[in-house]
Image (cartoon, rainbow, N blue to C red; front, side, top):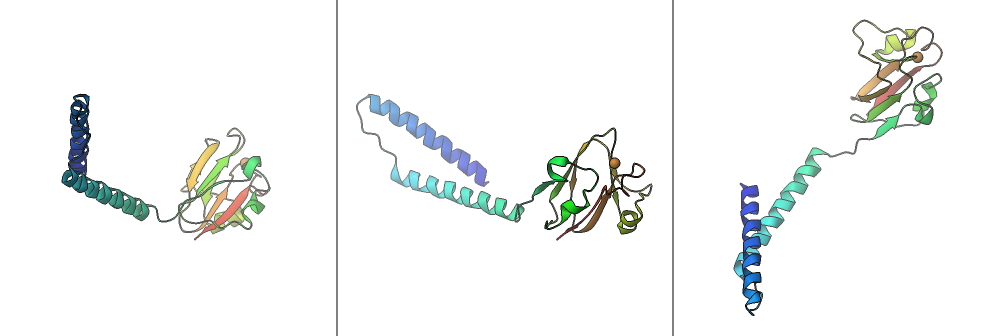
Length: 159
Ligand SMILES: [Cu+2]
């Protein structure tokens, strides 16, 4: 409804500009009909307001993207990488690694502690995996034998 009004409004402004241009070439003054112009401005303003309200509503917090292990990527001794970081739901973890050597499995607290993934664990193996965090504690390990025990595991707590 509003977009139709806006479109109609803009089309009419355009038409009226075209018309004024033609008039101008005949030596007449360029002038907008003041009443018409005022109504269009109101429609444009209302639309802008509505769009900005919608945008604010849909994205109340900014989601951050974290590269696990920073430039070193997902590897041994990544456990310390989470220290001092405050994660929140919606943030993205990027796991960069050599897919012929490593993988990423989402496990529970028990799996994290014992370095085991169950058959129901979701797993990633592309070498460039993006995982969106949900609220709460989440655990990631590499399931290649010896890797998790070697420190290839992280626990994050998203607020
Ligand atoms: Cu590994």
